[in-house]
Structure formats: C-alpha cells, structure tokens
Image (cartoon, rainbow, N blue to C red; front, side, top):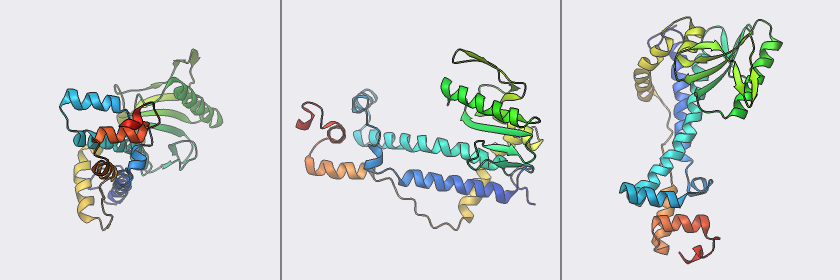
Length: 254
C-alpha cells in the first residue's frame, strides 16, 4: 500500500475522499440559481446596511451572499470528508445512514462526528447523548464518542453534565477532540497533523491527475437577477426586495 501522504490510510483512499469533496463543491456552486438563492428569504434590510456601511457595491455584496450560502452547504460536506477518511483506517467503517458516523468493525467503538464544537443546540446535544448511551447499553464493550473535529481544546473525557436541566452521564460515553480521535483510531499521535500537512500536496495531485470532465459552472443567481434589472430598471437590491416581498404593503411600488 502506498503512503505518500499519510501513514494511516492509503493514498488511493485519501484521493477518493478528496474527489468526493470536490464533487460536493461543484454541486454546491452549480446549484445556486435565483430560485435556490431566494429559498430562504433574503434580508435586504441587512444587505442595505452592509452595502452602505462597508462601501461595497451591490454586485459584490450579492456575490458575497451567494458565496456565504455555498459555504454553508460545504461545511456539511467537510464533516462527511472526515467520516470517509476515518472510515478508511483498518478496523473501522463508516455508518452509511445506520445512525452512527464511524464504528469499529468489532463493535467496540461508535462515534458521531461534528465538524465544529458549536453546531448543536441543547435539544440536539440531549438527543445525541441519549443515542450514544443506547449504543453503549446495547454493546457492553463499546465506547461511544461525540467527536468535535474543530474543538476548543484537545481532550478525551467522559461526557457528563447538565443538558436541558437534566444531569447526564454514562461510564462509556465520551466527548473527544478531532486530533485525539484521529490518534485513537489510527494509533498515531500526530495523525490529524499528518492530514493537515498532506492535504495541499494531495489536493494538487488530485487536481492534476483527475480525468473528470465536470465543468465548473458559475452560479447563475446574480446573472438572473441582473437580467431582470435590465428590464425593470430597478437597482439590484430593489429587484431582490421586490421579488421577495412584493406582497408587503406598498412594496409593489418598487
């Protein structure tokens, strides 16, 4: 097995994970049409402040808002990337919609992976603890983990404390930072650092060698909006406001 990039998964596996993430990037970029851009109502009051206070043109402002929506979609895919990388370590596998993200083949470990430490509200945290506790109860030798890839510290400790006014604890339910989880599964203390250092070269190699003919189309939202402004003679912000709030009193006058 080739280990040009990291020592704990094969080069082929890492490049496949990068390819999957690249596909997610392309999909996210290509999906932002005017319809999807408007899916959640646009806060044109905030955009007006942003444009005026920050001295940003309307075109640049809308492009920035489109990129923000793309970034939100990509954040979910980054978590999947880590699941796939970790699932390539010998003795472990990904969940494939089975209720967990990563498990040991011998059922001695189950884990739920969150890319950032602050992505859950209290209700989500409570539900996650209860789910991990059920796995621990069903599999008597299993340790179960809430993994925070980007955590506020480096740790591997029992997850105990108050959630939604209730005290929770279990002898085999843990919370763990990304660096220590990579170390735990790989048996290599610097595994997460290896990945970080290897990614630029691995991504560059993937981009050079890929035979994919996917065409990276620019999102069409801004083009569709400006096409309308050419007809209506509205400003970009007025056009977005009209298309989102024309049913509000007097907004049909825009």
